[in-house]
Length: 168
Image (cartoon, rainbow, N blue to C red; front, side, top):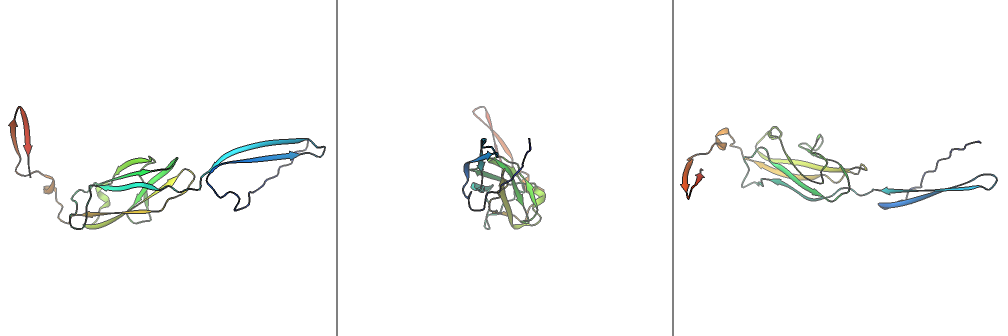
């Protein structure tokens, strides 16, 4: 029994849509025996898209944040993600995991200066499709010291059996 191996490449432009596809292979030998085999597969051409992408706490030029460990929150409508990552320079990316709905606390070490900082975020699905890079802007206050995180004028008052703590 001689075996012949043949390959076939589907021409460009034939499979242009994401979704379920079927390919049927049919073979016939020189005496007329026919064999058919059907293959099903899912073709993913769609890129992941952020439904929501935001920073917490919020900050802006007029009200910069003193929080040096903000959180990136996202929701993505995608089947299976391979990676969600961020970059501080748009080139070198750091993984934040592969959850479709997630959050990630940025380390304080990524903020090297006060003022406006751009954070680049991208998502890649299991098929290798990378979505467009999204940009978040975070404003960091110039006057950050450890004293900024120490409460001032701390008072505790008993009120109906509970302690009420106030500070500035």
